[in-house]
Image 1 (cartoon, helix red, strand yellow):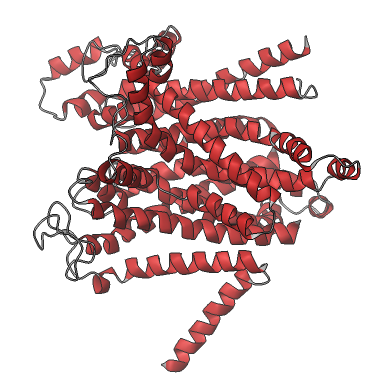
Image 2 (cartoon, chains in turn orange, cyan):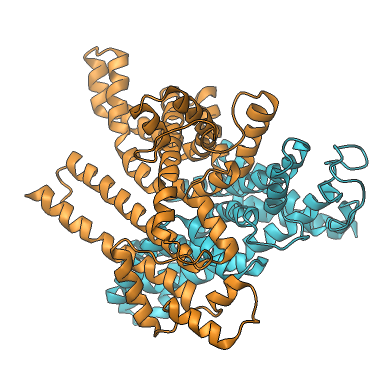
Length: 336
Length: 291
């Protein structure tokens, strides 16, 4: 009962936060001055009756509060409206084709950042106040201030242009045929047993995932190091040592205790991960939601921008819900 | 003249000294390194016309020349001197970041003070809005705002400032809640001191060290956000020199003129690093004084 109730209440709390972001996006995009149609057309020389017809067709002539609820109602049914630029093209279809690429990149980036961050954090925590510790801490501080596009371009320069080891950009070799099931290329190629596609997709994701992962790994280094320091100084570790428990086992127990706050942080980090993904996608011409957003911004396609914000708000809300549920499952004291 | 210079130098050192004084060795070194980096970049931007050998917006030589004594960082695809563009580019970044952090502090701190001090329904509603913005990917919000406002440095600063308002709000509100419960605030209230005076004279001074830390850390972050907006073409219009924008322009020439990505990339990272180091050093000091 306890956990189910917690999940229900916590889940309901997503609704206000998504609504707030939808409202902010609506205010930014619709109430601020400027006519979206004129912005898309890039000209003011359009006959007024034609402009009115266009506005009517897109529902922009209705009162703002009607537009607000109309859009929300349709969005709830998976209809994000139509692109202003390519008229008649549903935005939901665009997003559905782009979202898997972003998710694949974000998950790969998260994986890299966890491996690097936890690895360096563990080494630093176990060798506290040595030169290695200082080096790891500098790694943590330095990587956080790297500019993602620059790091990505440096990787392209070294591994693609000079060494020819990996492709410069894109998601998969266009000559490779892959039947998509989930839209996650690495998973799809494994599911269909398509070895060539898997190799190509893997080669394409290495540099973007490294770029995103390295920049976001710094906070994990610091977090795990500092937590390890606290845990290793605690009484239960002293008791283990007194009982002659082997150092390897002690490390394992300390690591398990120190990693709990990292779970929460990884959930919070997801927003940063999505933001970083936009830059990584632009740098590597990765066909995800980030490049979609940048394309739409160039054309001032307001409904599309609004839809992207709404989808990101939903993803962030869902991720934080999942993290909180994992947490509540691990720690029975957390209940409403 | 010499005397004036010495006096000014001593004053400056005193100012810095009291700011960084009695820091533990490593943190002090970090903060000083950060101050030097940021100081050099600010000086470079201020004295850009004296340092830059060429006009950053004019074609001065053939395009895509490699680095040489004549063009320290080569020339870009329009034959403009890259070194001069880097020197001038600092002006836009520093201006946008300064304006953005000042704006978000000017809105976030008073809101946090009022919300935390008075509490109630307004506080709950405001906290909810701030938390929603805080949880959302800040870069995407800044991109959307900058896109709607149109590409200009001031608009970029406004877009960036919205993103960091919740950072100040949350930090100030949390601290106000703690300080409010202490006896000295209670006695001030019992004496009938008006709330506005308690907030500005009794609570705010306690927050200043933490505000300084958040200020430099959010400035470091704002450098990266500005560079990102600029990289996506949302901060300046050509031919204005700006690091992020120049990096995007260099992206297309990574095969033929790879040296072009070095200048803008190194500068963005250095400036962000310098500000972060100052924040780290100050943060260490605050932690030691409080904890």
